[in-house]
Amino acid sequence: MNSRIVPTLAALLAVLALSDQALAQQSAAPGINYPSVAAALKDLESRDGKDTVVTHGDGWTTVNEPAAAAQWSFPPVGHAAYPAVLRRTMVRGADGQVQVRTDHLCESPAAACQALLAEFAQLNERIEQAKRGRGRPPTVPANGG
Image (cartoon, rainbow, N blue to C red):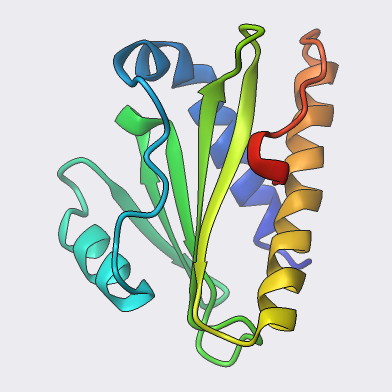
């Protein structure tokens, strides 16, 4: 993992802080509803400043959707898992606890996709640790990620 983790962690914690309102407005995390990574990136970037905030750092494109309590991450050209997108959503589990759900669309070789998912699973664990540090009980991320 590289230097993008700290800003990503901070952004997801900010989403977590705002997630109660967003979670009340959504019935379920919709996942990836695009036919390709390119289509997702094009659509999300076109919404920058409307209902999303698009940032670029270390070659990664990150799209935050505050109303959906979601963050999209696109690895850069040259990354082993390129093209791919991960959508991380804060969802309320059946037990009432907020969890991180990770959906993905990966158009690269399976091994590279699995490595990318493993990297984000580690980031999910950091989020869980941060939640525990803030006095919240630990939860298990939905969908194994």
